[in-house]
Length: 480
Image 1: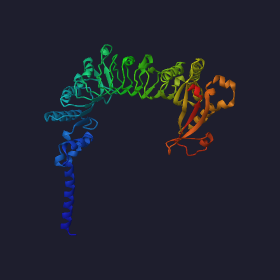
Image 2: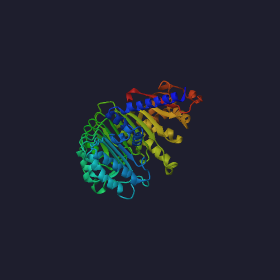
Image 3: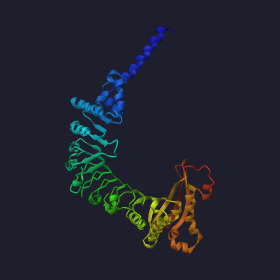
Image 4: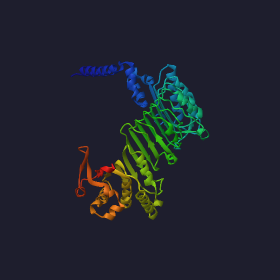
């Protein structure tokens, strides 16, 4: 093949590549925009080098996502200028904008705040449906900037995510004007202390999801959440008492995490269609639910750090009783701080157990599973106390990484005491009379289930690294 033929073949290949790119470029504009929608802002800008026809396509995509960690990091003035020019471009061309995300580092100067005052009115005229606004600081965990009240006023808004702001009273009241708002997420958002007691928050009935974390946003008494399907509260610093007066006819998922105001609250939730409830925290809450029409699963993660009183087991039993209509998975993490170790700690544990034994309570509560994490020297005592207030179908899910075999042998020793026939033992550990059968099981990853195994077989298995075991327990049916 001579040089002329090689050049002709090279040119033909180049033309084929060009035609392939042209075929993409010839796609309808709405499809091109949808392709660009799923790219990051940085990758969308990079498409400008594909061809002349792609040079400005990224400027017309239906979403903008700007973060000063991605664009002009360390040069806030340049970053603010780029965001400003892009928004002005959309406005000048009368283009709509479905989604706008802005993550910005706030310094001691007021420049970002002044830009927000300018940008938010522009966004309200573009029909933005999804809006995320995040303020952070390089030096402090959270910086609070006053949020312009107009952010809640756009009726086209369906999804709002705000982080790092303080809200004025008039700003919060305008939430009700966003009649189409379906998802609201607030992180590190606070109401000023002087208006917290008098403010009335009017949530739109269109809301389907609410996520509030590390904020003091209150709930108004009697709020209408007719369409709300998910409610997630984490680190909420305001009282949650008013939830008892709110209706949640469509609520399916409800999570409470680290909400320490619950220590002084008694809450009753009316959510007939709830299918999942989760609680995580160091205080044992007083919470109950109205009649549930569906099968509901509950996960309780309790680590009694804040409640060292000798009645936490009784509080836990009260909580389990109020949730007895649910399928309960109970996870207890009982780790003490250094100043609770020694004799004082042991006395507290024994007081808890004795209170549970002497309470004369009615039948224990059936739970689906029980996990216990504590020091080995106190494992047996705490386990007996927990067996006094609940009857788990499964206990354990022990991972063989550190103490797996020791824990398994210890639990097996406790469970098999019923076979000794010691009547004095039964007198002090009444749960032994109710336990009909206990068997050890190991996770079978091939079958995606559990299979029986003996303690000796387990001890002789040299291949155990990250295998999991549990105890299947069968209790007297009259109790369950």
